[in-house]
Image (cartoon, rainbow, N blue to C red; front, side, top):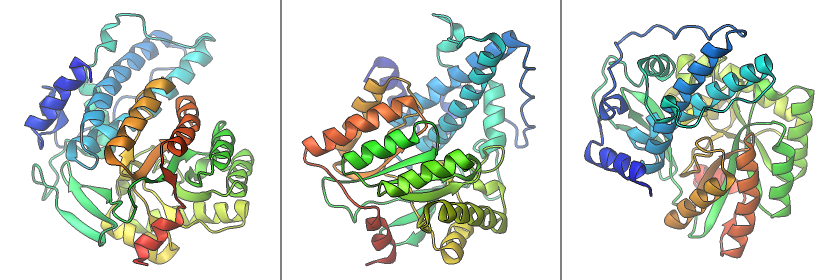
Length: 373
């Protein structure tokens, strides 16, 4: 652990229930925050590069905090959700810069924005997306009330001003047992990841997005199913059209959207999906219960977050993932089949698990555990 990470770990351990904005001496956002200003025009590349640096700087901060925070803690929920959102925003900016200039953009060495700070603009946008910094009615600082969904399997904890987060347990797994899961596909790398997991005798769950299920996407999830994997529901978007969590939808709209994605999966693969994972792990109790009762989708969280969105270096990602698995001894592993570093690390991970006495177990263990079988 480097000095910066150690310092962040100390902050988290000493002030476990303060918001990230307070930990980092950021200005507090007001209770109601306007949506952040629109992105710069496509031809304003200098402004777009500046915004890229601003968001990349914040990503570094949230990455470090997520890595040192216990999964499910208020600090982790805030940092991991924010980091995933920021990574998607940054990649969108990078694509726009590439289209405008014809060259991939890299921050200049020693750039001030590369030092790890979070601007008020970023805090404001994250507040609009997640509501971590608004004082909502009934919210209490450090409130981590839990609402059981299935005893011994999962529950909803209310963290960061009443944001509901799905907390997953893995007590039904034996030591050395692992369940592999991949989010946010299908994409250009999906079939390679799927084939590698099949070759490594590692049946996995691929949580897919409906917006990626055009003709090419349907072919990709059909290949996943043929490889012996479970194709599962993540959302149409991630989760709304603007990548806000499902708490921005009514229960009825959430169920309706997921029903459409489930139907598309069934038509493409010939099998009904059996699992659902809420983007960011954020979902209301009512919505989660309705998704199971109306769509028969078993909720799935995770107990080992590889944080593969936080680094583009596959060697670092692989080392971090192995360390997490060794520390916990078992678990439900979260990765993404859309990142090049994840593709490379996942292929190495399957071999490492087999060589070190771990067993990738069938996703059906989740169904049995949820139903108490």
